[in-house]
Length: 124
Image 1: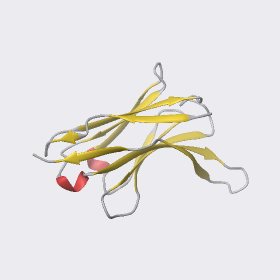
Image 2: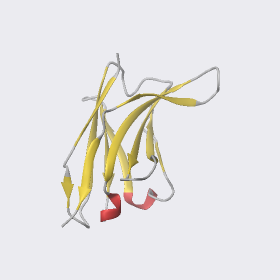
Image 3: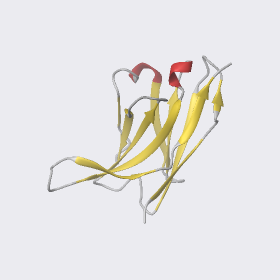
């Protein structure tokens, strides 16, 4: 059974850097056919995909957030992290990490496991 657990500060001040960690158990973040994403949901809004780290450590980010987003990993701890710079109150959201698995049926990656989410509030 694959489990993901987000951790990080619940409150961040504007202009600071938000750092969230996703600790994974039951699967290796370096395994082929998996990729690992960060997604957030602001209050009253839909899900927003933020970025992904692939099995080889390369990354991709939502163009709207790319200039402020870095995703990195620690393979020794089997965890990956989100760094979001220069946060504003608009970054207040529930943040999720998730595992995607390649589907030979669809030919796409599909979300298969999610963390429970962590609330982050940006406020002075």
